[in-house]
Length: 453
Ligand code: NCD
Ligand code: ZN
Image (tube, rainbow, N blue to C red; front, side, top):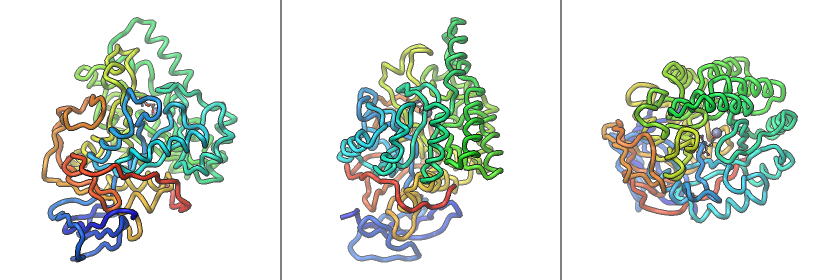
């Protein structure tokens, strides 16, 4: 059995190219028919009248911490949170312990997570300073792509030297495998952090000042150049700086193979929020001022930003409660990802069709799991989310599935509500409550090379 049978009737299906009134019939986990007035005997029916139906959300950027960092969170909690929030596939980052830098570690991680997944999942490998020779074996193991950390962050994984970076991008071009970059220059981050720290500052804004935009811009500039030379797939994740956006915009206009991701926190939080939330907002790269935020919204709307990811990066309550220098960077986000962006769309900050475009189809294409994931098409997986645009969501601590439910968004009141999360025809969550599972499966990078977003 691949999945369940389900008929979703009477809803408006939201795809990147428009909103259509259609029923969706899923049989044994796969979309069997999309059309008007579908009927089928003996299958479960969801009445989606007045509701929106999105393809299942693909969160391309989560750190679920297992194995090795379970004091922060684990795959059970993380994928329940995903299901509750409308995310049907997560792409899991490799900065776990040990780092996912070889076939053996990769396969062990797949084995370990497979029995715990409430939603489907793909895995990244990591390319660091000593494992370039593992590129091929990780691709063959089914990695959706690679993460490369150019700057210091959770895990402190040293970046490859420039020669290895060049070669990794040649391999990326040859094999059609995307590299996702944490683009901050390591030396510059250390330099500015040293300066700001030695000044004695302890205010939360000191974090942003210790990693100014130039750290990000220098790294992006170099990656654009390397992509132009090699043809490699450069995906800049968690973009926060307006100058970085401009570099990606120009590179894309020149036909260079560069794509960009940003996250809800860079669009919805800024340095102004340090006074309200303190070090809770600490994340790498840091949130910046309103001018940066406005430019990021422009980039979402003009196609420069091709994807949104939650950068779900949980830490323990203790790790999050240090001072500006000792507290950990990142916070949980997978459960609030769709609710926050749905609210933003319903408030008119971006068209509603940006949700399936940036949060499902483009990530699935770039990481080669499309069209099985990331869209609604006959033969593809029956993953979808039913949303009530007229209802309201209040983010409450007690509704979060995280081991340490700490996020700046607690108490936020949002337009729209996730009603049903469906993975391969099976309802896994209903009105924010997980009702079924764990039945998620590992999704390997497919042979379908799709089309670059
Ligand atoms: C991430 C984490 O904690 O894993 N933290 C963060 O601040 N974004 C690591 C990362 O992606 O930089
Ligand atoms: Zn990162």
